[in-house]
Image (tube, rainbow, N blue to C red; front, side, top):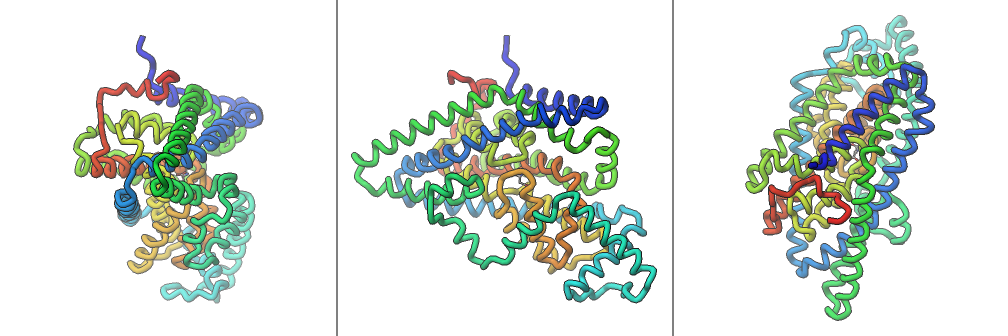
Length: 481
Ligand code: ASP
């Protein structure tokens, strides 16, 4: 009998997880789910992350050392960064187009928007900002009283959503020197970088440096090291295969946990949360779907003719379903690498270099969502952003998505910096916080799909793409393959 493809098993796991969470919520068992099922989801993410860091290290060293020529490495590196940048700007432009057309923030009732505007004015004046188009509500005692109520409410909501520590984290990043991101890439202690999952760029830097040096030492000295690195790499890839066998169960636990935490023992709450933010969520969702089903396939069709539409999705489905359930491009990276190499036929030399960089710096889904979120929040507060401010958003969302770590909710934290760059109140992230986890799942799928698209383009350009449509993705994570 033909085996069920892994992505189907994962999808079944996800559906059962949601059904379980809804059932347990209505039966009052949410605590049981959170205490006894959700931890398996955490174990799964831990396992994937455990593999991701050494895999990135060894696969980059092996990729760079096997390229054999530093000049072609430089050319590939330049092309990779340029195309990653272009796809990010494309995603942001799409987000801006959608949010300015649908105007989700203006679909909320006017009275609430006026209330919002007042609280914004109070906040802005406390920050010393000038509001050019504002009516001066501050003279009116009735408005002032309502404004106080709103601002108290925001404070307590902020606390509840534990957004305050996120604010603090982001403000630290903001105060650093403009060259700080560059400084942060160069580790002063490599063992420290290895022990911290957030320092992936430092690991990438070290691996490239190490790989290049292998190219410059005599072959008889370099070859044993390259062989060792290649073999260690195989071990980690086998670990991915083993962990993926249990993915459907783990994904069940992950989804059951996420939904139970949102719903508690009252499913109605989830529905309420979504009703208020439905237009915003829909705008983000439409943008992300356009990226996945139209933009990337169109880019592939233009630059890589070999890979057909359905073939691309068939090849990437295990990574996409995993990105959706883990909300982390870093945790998904080992699986993305296997899908791209085994199913799309990208040569390891390219994928081991392009994908880890992509997982860390290329986040098209995150940047699209940030662009939509900022404009939505501005609309909600009756603030019309000028073209200049919208261009600032393009710039800051690009940087913010590069700076976002590839873990759940990282995009939300960096949104604070984008809001700040156009003079809006960073505390507003509390407004969109309730739906963020779900949107995070979709934007992570876009992030991973974008990396795979760019990787295929680079591989094709280097004549290192050998796509065989007849590969059965059921076998991608076979233990004896
Ligand atoms: N969760 C996303 C990722 O890992 C980042 C984000 O948008 O929060 O790609």
